[in-house]
Length: 333
Ligand code: PB1
Image (cartoon, rainbow, N blue to C red; front, side, top):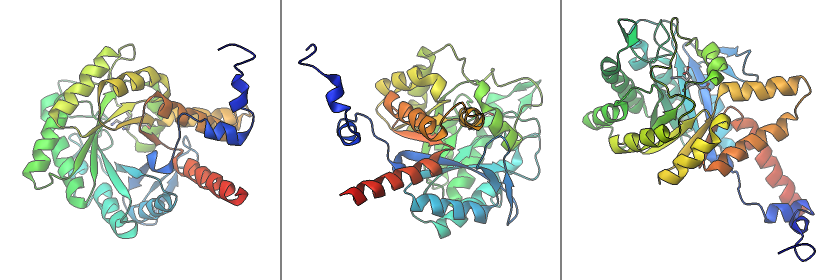
């Protein structure tokens, strides 16, 4: 079809026509909100590098989860920050640690909220790596039972989903076997199957105190130039028993989101990580970007690339904007 028979602008002319013709949509229930949990009570420690976010004690996490539930946000993803760290990250499986306490508090305060618990050692080890060290390297196989113990602790506390973000080989199978052996067969596993060694995790590491004391994560997280490897990782984790998958980070890896979406048929989440969040805020603070438009455009971009779910630090603000939009549309009727 060519001009003037075809006029692309006919369906862009008004907001209502654009809404009618929209190909990709975003709903609050497709958003997952990461939350940082610390020990104690009444604790709210703002995170300088992540405006609007704070390290919260369990009861305040539960309050936040209730507010997110009221906005229709689909799930929360919990990251624990213990008061004490050690070489093997033993705080990760402490039944009275911040994450199990937060899960129990959410179950009471917002029982309808879906709770994901991140499973990794990096927030709990004093060296900051995602596993235990042996001869200066992360010992893959020695880390597997530790991850499994942590996953069981979160499942026992009531987590609906455990989400291993460690990138150890074989961790999904180890966690699935442990959950099933401990009577937690109904707990789902959302694996960070495709997770790159990225420059975009800085603010998170600042928030969690999880920057490696030595070396980096290139020996276990994926190399940015690779996408075929992402398909191998995704298939391997599904084979081991993952129920759904995460690609992370998000924006720099939209091609990977698309490739994984076309290769697997389970729900797929994309993680708009802390550095992606912080850079939009920093540019907006300098007057270089309209933050509201930039957050909507980046999150819908992840959905358009094929993500069914988007893990984002914008979840609460975006869900509120979606609710306002619905209210305004209803008022116009
Ligand atoms: O928002 C983020 O930057 C997420 C960071 C992510 C949490 N799953 C990891 C970043 C890192 O490698 O330090 C934590 C790894 N377990």
